[in-house]
Length: 387
Image 1: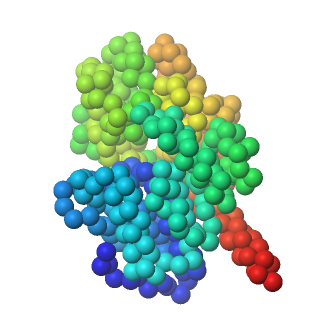
Image 2: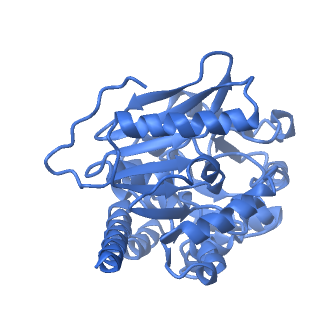
Image 3: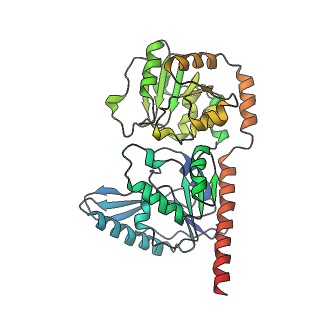
């Protein structure tokens, strides 16, 4: 808690942004990282993660990153009871605010469970960036639904990570806004120029059908196994951490290759060596509302894409003819065969037209405008009440 107070730059916005997240900053580079690195160019950003429990004296570990972004990891003594945990988190959070002189700030939530030790705060505005239906995930506690209802009542703005989530939340909040997954097109367009395979992929024969992302209960492992059995001469590459499922549950065949997690900067290099990108998502409660960030990333990298019928992939990508949709292993194999024989120039022309105005920069700018409008409206309301 003794990190030096970072001075604001002359171009910094007046409001700090304090984010409360169930995701680790260094886990997978996805929506929170895309957005908050951009907010950090004009705001001090404090990204507060869920606690890590250990043996020792409880404290906040603060790591300053690029621009004005700080990753804050609560380190909590595992001997603490639930009430002691919340008491520590509240007092340590207040100390963080005091040490860093955080006063006029935006409270940005990815998880409603952190309300338990943050509801005493008085932010300039409250944002709920709802990127997943967390209550539908494996082992999700019942408390999550109750806390979400509370967060929706406290939030001034609700952003959703896709159309399905927007449809589910729009009637539960008067200021809900749909911000689907966007794209850093320049980053993934590097795949169009890469020629050198990474060492752990170079020896894998073609054709290669690849996936990157978290491998968990949202992955249709039976579908993957079925395709690999049907096409032993095809090679299926899975990149990403295995979470909430056992490694023993992963299908094992000579033509299925698990390469582990990779850094965001490395992904275009791997993509460049694939013939087709796949999204073999299971169709269950945990995928009902997902809007995969990888959809536009695969397309911008120049890969044809085959996906299971996830709602936010079918609409708009499937309907626009940008992604092949398939459900069974047999359908997937046929779709991959079609994808491998596509006219690349025709597909890339359609992709570029579709993504012409898509960017995380534009998304962040639109969000920022809504936030500033919200702060101004609340400030005017307070001033009027004080007259």
